[in-house]
Image (cartoon, rainbow, N blue to C red):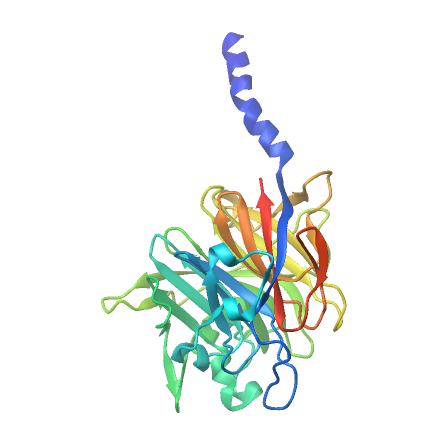
Length: 366
């Protein structure tokens, strides 16, 4: 009897933790300018800041804007982590005007493995030379940065066509994994928006959209799992085959979610996964946060993340498109608000985003 009582007492904290579940709330929201206010592109159209990916390298935050811009701006920029609060002016950031930045299009996620001292950067893989014109191959890139030297990035699985070096050969591996009775050779169209490294050497690509073409996307929560290694020349090598995992949403999750961000959590031994919904141009966005424990990741059954109080799913009024662990209790996220003038709160004052600004959030998780 005494042994049984001791066993119950030992299990109580685990049972309570399981019942309590994961909770989250927005600790801080703010704005960061990634282009100059009122800047125009070559066609006279206003340049927008649509932040899509984030990671931390050393004491600096590296952020991507998935819109093509021109100097003095760049589609990748960085700033000291200590300055990412409130409203950040363009003069505070450092545009990363490196050769590799100018050669790629539509960066959708960045992930970092401290164990390997490696940063991986993925584009959308949503266009080809046939659908995207002369620059179509530039939308198909996986880049590797070793250490903290962001001025240089290697193209993973490089393939040269004319003057363009890209990772377009990875498309065939993704297509094989995405094959279905409807699309035996894989869907004609797909879009990558998530990227995460899981110890020791697993890499996950998050697929947001599939379909017959760009104009008829089907949103989903699908992950492609592969492995990576380093060859004798220091190049990142990906496995030839990827496994497909269709994630199962918990009760209470919104319908029609599309995967838009992922980040690995070493403390909790699992992956944070974001599903989001895009409204019509100018309409509010919506995102929900989920968690996939390592012990269940092959099942693909996501755990709910609840709001700070109550029993409802944690919702954000933004399209959360890039996340990274800031510390054991905080996720740093950036949001792609397109042309929606979303509202944030800075120093207890409501502020509306301008088109040259991206939205960032700090999310407390427990």
